[in-house]
Amino acid sequence: MKVLHVNDVARIGSALVRQARSIGLDWTLYDTARVDPRWSPRTRALRRALRGAAWEAGLARRALASDLLDIHGATVTAHTRWLRRPYVLHLHGTDIRVRRYEPAYTNLVERAVREALDVYYTTPDLAEHVLDLAPAATLQPVIVDVGELPRAVDTAAAPPRILFPSRWDAAKGGDMQLELLAALRDEYGDQIVLEGLDWGENAATAARDFGVVLRQRMTHDDYARWLGSGSLAVGQMSGYMSISELEAIATGTTTVMALNSRWYDGSHPTTRDVPVLGGVTAPERLLETTLEGVREALAGVRVQGGREWVEANHSPARAVERLQERFALVSGS
Image (tube, rainbow, N blue to C red; front, side, top):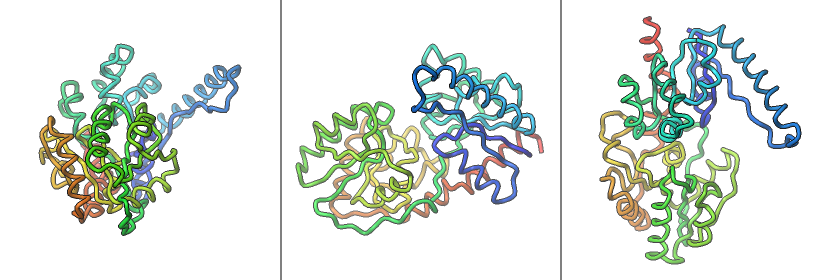
């Protein structure tokens, strides 16, 4: 079966295609067109239109030569539906968690889900936003290639360096991220160093009010090395893990993550036995559970086996195996 993946969200499409082709599958990737920020404002509209037309021509050529499209992101169907080609749909987060409820996107997103032959969501929290539209949708978890990640350096930094791998905004916990910073400063003062990314609407507040050292956006290789350099990492305050937390775990850096018990119920291999401090907790205890995990880590508790768990559950090889099973059902083969 010739499968065309459209859009490379969080490098997932490229990871799937690279793994699939390594075992002889005929999968390809066609990423979406991007606006070049260097374009002059005077010519931007015209150049965007020309690039869009060229992209659609390339899409049509590739789609007509494929048996199935795997579209990554519900809103991307605004640019693919005209082809009338059979497709499955990967939902990656904001497209279904946020865009579905914005009036400008509701019809587009819901139609994309309903018209898909099969639907996949990448984090367990998305089930409650998807299953009413597509009851047969399945969790196809985010992908992490541990081969791209260094092993954590054995550091006994003084003071300890606590890394925050996610961006600072509402999708990642928003106000609760700031509440956590306040609690850590109240309890530990300057005995700890807090580091995070200069990314998100609350980044400036985190730096100004709580002394977080902000790291500029960096290449993935540099980001991976940074993840492996801390005394511990603290995940987002949303109750679910994304790629950032999984990559931190995979480096071997002890990671603190409060996991919402509604979603981490053990019903899927990726929602049980997660190698973190904090772990599964009631939704109303996310902050307290995270603080408890940080205290354990600062007291010397370390998590083992994280890299192996990520490899077993989130690897490109495992993801391709799962998708092959779904594609076989869709095609009737």
